[in-house]
Length: 356
Length: 281
Image 1 (cartoon, helix red, strand yellow):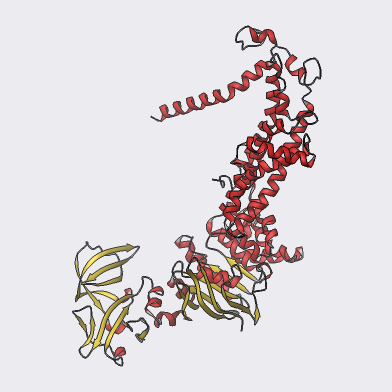
Image 2 (cartoon, rainbow over the protein chains, first blue to last red; image 1 turned 90 degrees about the vertical axis):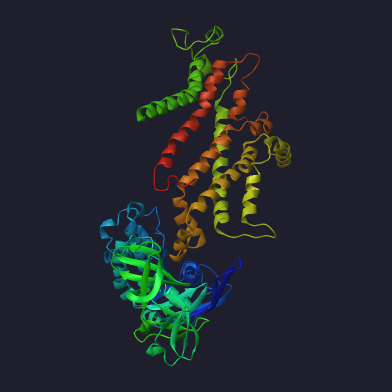
């Protein structure tokens, strides 16, 4: 057992920032909290750190209740989305700051600061002030400061979101290497980007409107999202959700699209369903669902094609750059074998064997 | 276009500079005149138009013979203004940090109400406060003393410090406080080791306001002192007797703005330097 949160609830002004969140986090594991903005990710980190007091619920570390332990006596580190460092101290003194508060010996401080600076690549910059560094370097300082203490709990609140794309990729890689060496800490990382969670291949906690919706390995959550909400949060672009039904003739979408019933959905009873498909599994076809182009977003070498068939909207994630005119007619193919089926209320009924 | 713009820009700057500097030059020139140099119409150039004299200046350091010894009031003004400003800045900064970071509630009273109570001290016209202050100091036996004036000035200056510093602290990200606490700082250590060292621009602005308002006050210095204690503005005005000695008035005026000018020059370099410049609005 390690860090256990039980029924954490926190409201302010009628908004539930945390709504009955319970989770158990083990040492040496890497957890990624995924959720859209205002889903309660930051509130959860603050509650775990002791920076805010939940209205109800408890947090225990190795069985001991943390409520009585003030923040400054806990073994917690946090890296923020904004690059938070102490502007009046040099990089060296920034990293040494938490060690000095613990009154460590000068030689020990020196040794630890040098070691961690080497790990995160700050050795040539130790004499500078944070204000004289680039965003990526500032975030490295914040990371070094959080790592140097060897805390039980290391919290990272969307640490890469304010960096440009190249730097984000590079730092993400370095983070992964650094984190794998933290065997006794509990790492909790928040992000709004499901792809980041998949890249880290970590244990995922999906949050929405203050509630914890699903916990599991990233690949597992991606392959079997528990509800339509999880399916949309844990897919970028969000999973297409298409109302339809299963009956003797096959699988119906909208009112007039009839597909053969896919094998993995054969055991489901007939009735109304919501079918989900990842935008990457929607393709263009010579003959398929006749649709009208509503928008074509071109991002680098990919195209996100938004189309409409009657009341049914679909997003297709296509490789390569494709130019489409607004209102242009296209034929879309939805591969039955890749369809998820959800009950109308949202719970997963069946998932494709391949994981979509 | 850009040449015209530059010309207009510098013309405007020159015009404004002249407007600001001219009174000082006028006072400087007048301070070296005597009655002869003043009554015969405007004169500007020493030696050519009037015979410069140190009479005006020497009156400031002489008692008797129409002179006023300015040294005593000058020292009093320095002591009162600096003490009141420092105490206001220390108390005001602590109060402002609390109001910015912690939640207080007493009945219907919330942080914003407390902040407003501080600021509301400055809403009333000074005349309204004069009699209460007079009676309070009389009760305490502190009328006509520097201590009494310091207390009154703290009441007047601390709201300014609170106001400026609350505004400043609200611009400092809370994550900085949180980081400090997670790194092992108690709330006071957080303030002392992390927030205060990064608050120089706010402190400079608040301190400057306190010094200016304290130094330039005439009304309370006039109503709450009689013979034992005299502050500089009162001493300068007291120069006006049956004949107005323009020369020593000018000299005294120049001497009285000197410290503010010096402080402004020193602090200005703090304002324009450093990473938090412009952090206050």
